[in-house]
Length: 508
Ligand SMILES: Cc1cc2nc3c(=O)[nH]c(=O)nc-3n(C[C@H](O)[C@H](O)[C@H](O)COP(=O)(O)OP(=O)(O)OC[C@H]3O[C@@H](n4cnc5c(N)ncnc54)[C@H](O)[C@@H]3O)c2cc1C
View 1 (cartoon, rainbow, N blue to C red):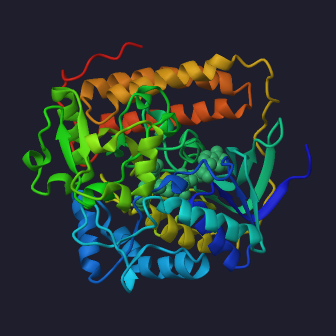
View 2: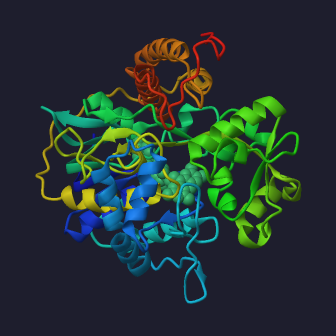
View 3: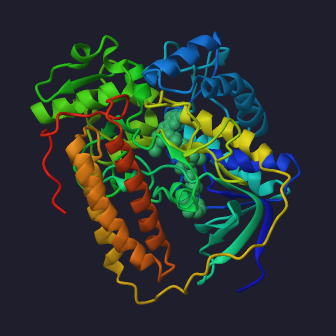
């Protein structure tokens, strides 16, 4: 084993939350190491974000009210205040002044967009590919900045802990694992889309940070609140197994914000029958309506004829064309897994329940989203909490404690092991822990996932391959979601319970 790597602050993940934490820690004078599975330009949801980043504009109260209403009043009001109060300064300091992001303008000012659940236009965007216009300059800026090292294609496998304190993480850059010791560790590992058959997330969204933190004893919360986006492209390619890389792509909420209508297989516009805000109703309402209409009438399309689709959303028009979709006939859409509202439980500075462990972005549960997230608030949450946690993480001594012992990678791994287990895990999650749930289905799913986790654990203990750790992390995460869902008897936000006999039994 070579000399251990050290840093004042170790950041795991290079989406908006990890980059913001790294920037804030470096501004405080810390030596920062960012490790990330991603290889530019791909691998982070941030890069795929479309609609934009909401910010506080005009009356802050209305933003607070919209967030609380979207969450069915389950969001933590103090956390929402932190978001709303800090939004304008964070956006203008980091995104505009430091990175020089050129948000779309209209006349003399910004072209603020409106999306479902927002009572006014407050979303900054760059076309419908805002994420890449934020993240790529961010990474480039961090590359050039003193005090920050970024190691790509490097996964954290496990946390290094001693007496309830976190001293860093074990990386997969060497066969037996490479310890990286740090005064504080910030997890910014993103979402859990890879736990579902269909998701908008990149394939590496296996819940790594969540699982590592939970296995180390950190508190997690609100895990049952998995958000399904109502309008992911549902074409032929999207039916295959896997995540966003399979041809699924998101048709941003902004398209409905600009006037697109949802129509069922009979050509009827149905959303006004479900909610007074029709296509701009909260996400969970629209997602369930789309799901129900697809079941009843065979398909749902997004009718973009009320707007100048190619003019206003050139990147989405291009995505349709690449897949041979004639959008003038409507874009076939279906709900699919999109965002985890819960996660590693943190305070207003991203501190977890474990000493010297922080969590930010989608892997963290700040309380801002409660049971359901308002559109375009997660980039903002990653930015605001990333900055706050990065600052708070500075100033701890680096302690080189004993890292967990790992065996060398086994060259004779049965390649299909991870594939087979992942297929089973995703099927159970999609069928029983998806958009509609039943108490019986959730109990059975928990039992199946517990067995699956046991089989995976036995394997991972003797191997160090990244895909097996991802499988372990996905199985821990899936079980946390299923258990939390089984324990929550109240249908609220993204957690929707149907009568017990509404779904088919799980066959293991
Ligand atoms: C298609 C799409 C569109 C979206 N549109 C919007 C939008 O318009 N507005 C909005 O606010 N939100 C949007 N979202 C949600 C938002 O993009 C994400 O919630 C947010 O970007 C998450 O940021 P993050 O930094 O927490 O995680 P990510 O950006 O996903 O980054 C996670 C990072 O962690 C790394 N990582 C993971 N595990 C490990 C490990 N074990 N070791 C090392 N590195 C690891 C990954 O490689 C990646 O670099 C969208 C999401 C998707 C998928």
